[in-house]
Length: 146
Image (tube, rainbow, N blue to C red; front, side):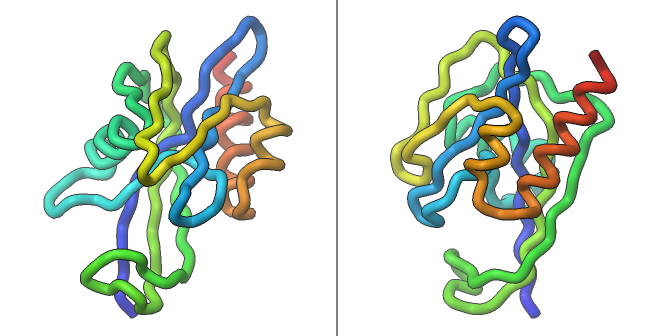
């Protein structure tokens, strides 16, 4: 089976004692999730994550949190060449990033909406179980660092 590789991040900000997570609405997939996108040829996962986050949300002043990286793998139908319309294995690496005093500006094409939500609100919003698990792991990781 063909494979595709993507990278993105669970992005958070602090408001007082509360941690709020950025969820974005993918117009293409009709689902809430986290910013992510395909790796370009020769691109590292981290560079792809930075590029895709900037393209989808306008955020570029992010602090990557060392020690956190989660992988998700699933089967899906590819929505892009060269495997468009074919069943593929998709592999996504998610980093953890803190947003620093910068406004989100969704691209309107791939991402049509965004929200900063509490852990429980974000868990309800994201569609896929693997993202709920990654979100919980990100929260637990941050809780150990506080």
